[in-house]
Amino acid sequence: MFEDLQPAPTDKILALIGLYRADPRTDKVDLGVGVYKDRDGKTAVMRAVREAEKRLLQSQDTKTYLGLAGDLAFNEVMAKLVFGDSADFTRIRAAQAPGGSGALRLAAELLKRTRPDATVWISNPTWPNHVPMMRGAGLTIAEYPYFDAVSGSVRFDDMLATLKTAKPGDAVLLHGCCHNPTGANLSIEQWTRVTDLLVERGLLPFVDIAYQGFGEGLEADAAGLRLVAGKVPEMLVASSCSKNFAVYRDRVGAAMILAKSGTEADIALGHMLAAARTLYSMPPDHGAAAVRVVLQDKELRADWEAELEEMRQRMLRLRVAFAEALRRQSNSDRFDFIAEHRGMFSRLGLTEAQVDRLRTEHGVYMVGDSRINVAGLPEDGLDKLAQAIVSVLD
Ligand code: LMR
Image (cartoon, rainbow, N blue to C red):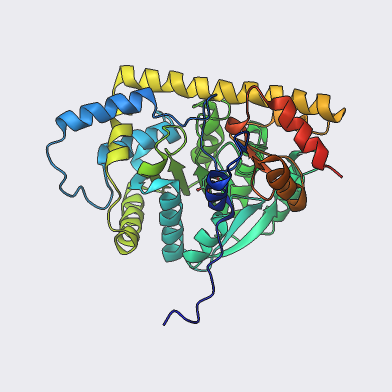
């Protein structure tokens, strides 16, 4: 039965985890998968999350089913975290999902049920898993230009020009903040213009917000999404707690719906949950429960926000220091954009062959499109790394 199967394509990002682990070199550098690391290369459990887990261990007296939407209090606090306290929650519904990926798939499934002929417009480039995920839900995808590799900035005019060709009812997948893989983000003025276009053309915003708090700050990172939410009749959101709560393996996320009315929002949520039932039934509880405890408790929340801010500031410092090291080593301003970008990633603009050489000759691991995880930069080895990068150029 399996004899005709060809090997499945490997996920380019996740494959790096295995390759890196298998490399015996002690001075290897991991800039691959998007996981926050501290200066010692550790991905710690956040203080507030650990405390919340202790509390859960003591207080939880059952592990019976919660239901298709998971932890309802989690859904409520997550919707507030994303949409902000003053959003119109009568029209918003959320469903806990297994990670941001689960949330994306739930939103895509809802889209398939409600607008089966819609095209989902994705940025070029985007997180590679967006493509199979949308296709897996049976949706058609098309690309809008997003990134200018030479200047390291957003091709905003081209993006708008292409989105003007989308047909009413199509969905536009936007990165809420910290664009993955480029780190080049829309300014608030650009969000305003995108919003106007969405409204004018009757396009559905579908926002993936997986790095809230990693870019300009918790509130600022949601500003674009909130601006859209204030103007459009309907919207889909997939949010993740993997990064900002560092609960990667616990799989914590939420799929959210903004509808024209509460009644329509309830019906849409019902379809999303029906899709969940056929995919995985109910989401895992533990990580979402810990996040809910943190967000509901004033002190734990303050501590979480403080730790998240420390992480963000560290990534900003690394960006500046790495751009300076590259300037020194390359005698050019070619990589200055790294200091301007925000979030966990930037794309260096190297070829796949150059990326391969960095791995084989220098033990430096990054995604084939030359995306680097800024949090993985070695604080005390930036010049050595910059030298290695410069050595593979041309
Ligand atoms: C990444 O982009 O590296 C992360 O989102 C991890 C993943 O699942 O790809």
